[in-house]
Image (cartoon, rainbow, N blue to C red; front, top):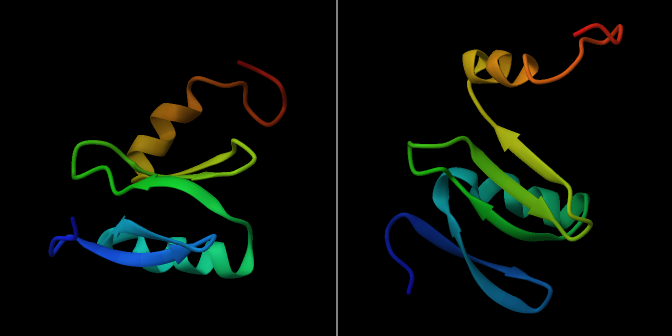
Length: 80
């Protein structure tokens, strides 16, 4: 059921409800990049996410959140 926080987008011939905060980006990605299979705005509690058919994912987060995620990986020179 559609509410004020979602809009309908046609993806792969199906009408899908998309959170308005990520709607424009999801529409552009589906039109010009590759099909998405799931997305969520995070509802103010988590970073937004957009998941593609090939099991890759985009996360949209603040700079500070991103720096915390960086700590989980080696740096670009391979140093932890």
